[in-house]
Image 1 (tube, rainbow, N blue to C red):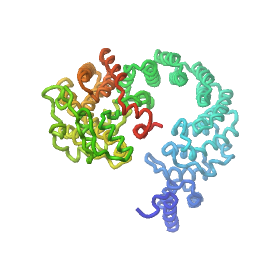
Image 2: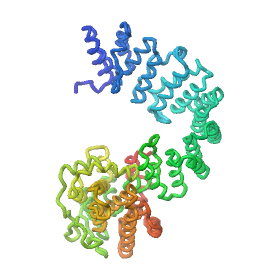
Image 3: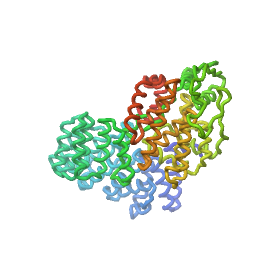
Image 4: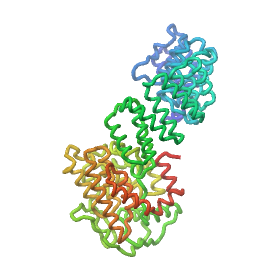
Length: 610
């Protein structure tokens, strides 16, 4: 790449130089292409607009040289907008700028003098101005993060001038309020929305006022405004959901659920009310059935009115529902501590043999450390929990080695590109794993004991520096999710995917046990017909872990219990056992992570949470 091509201003200057050459040669079409490129790179650069002005003096204002079609280049659209304004059609130009902002909100498309001109709104109908402001609002966040507001401020200037010019137009005042609220001007939003209601009492005006009050922390007034909106239009169920959400945000869950119930009584399939109702009921009583019902609704109603995040919001902080829990083994704790302190222990002594994946992960990360196992408890961790299961590991004394040959390079690369220790919810993880559908079963199994190196990404560096064991677990989880996509035409009870996963979870006690169990739990989330079978398998595996723990430590039991509580349709006895196990067995690593430190920071980084 030529020097300077990553600098927007230098790139724009290069495009302008080519545009000027084309203009000198009378090649208007190519000149227009280069100007559009310059606009895309530096939309507010004065030199760009100087060259655009040369098109504006053409008999047709240069507008036809910047055509808009289904796949228009954004620089072409913005250049056309400026030429339309210069040709006396600023309304058409503003609509194009708003469309560009909706496509790429980070571009400073409207940061030009004609948009900020105080006299501009006098040339336009207030209905058009309101529609443009609403178009901008539709393409940006609510609220917009403070760091991202700069390119949107010219629209707020336009809103101010528009309200000054048309002070009694209710629709314009409401739209201006919606924009101001998104850009952090909450007091202004309340003022404009209040004036909008006075000028044009309507459902929409009251909704805008309710939202403004809510952003200002004036909850009681927000609820009253939204109640008035319902009175204007009792059949607009989205307002019911808004009232419920507002009440819930202030701890009034019973009232909030009452509003969702009112909406569902009118239309049991109204998506906003269904999503809000399940989220609030789960928030009130913690019953997993609400989340499973929500997942079923999402699957059965793929054409919702808009995207909802309620299920992901409820799952994000739950082990297995939203993220892969860290390993709790003693060797994993030592590994994380060694990385945090940047000191490699010469000798590591553990009181009992731990799962083979854990021992192998530590040996790979700390090759110079001698690991000494003081003893092996009973029942022997090196033996599978049931006979006849698939053998993933071989033991030479206390040293485990893979019993399978390495996977193909293609399989390793596919899982490297896919694996991530967090997901929105189990159905989303299932959907993402479909990219492994073409990977052979033998390769997927080989990945369980031959994890590829961490990817050359920020994620890979974070895991390598803080918790490489988590990467091993991550690969195992996604390999097992890949197994769920193998031969999906086979009926579940006798399917290859069920047989292999059940075989894995009854093998040697290991992280692969957790990964296989999560895959089965995920199957139950996405397919109601398998829930009873999976719940029975999960309960049986949990009971076995509890029984073994009576004679020796079972490091994966806490995780098995969390998986059990994430299982749709789990019987009450198993749920009680899982809850008791979690309460009694809080691993040191997780307790430390909860208090802070590198592991906690890694979790926050992985999940994108502050």
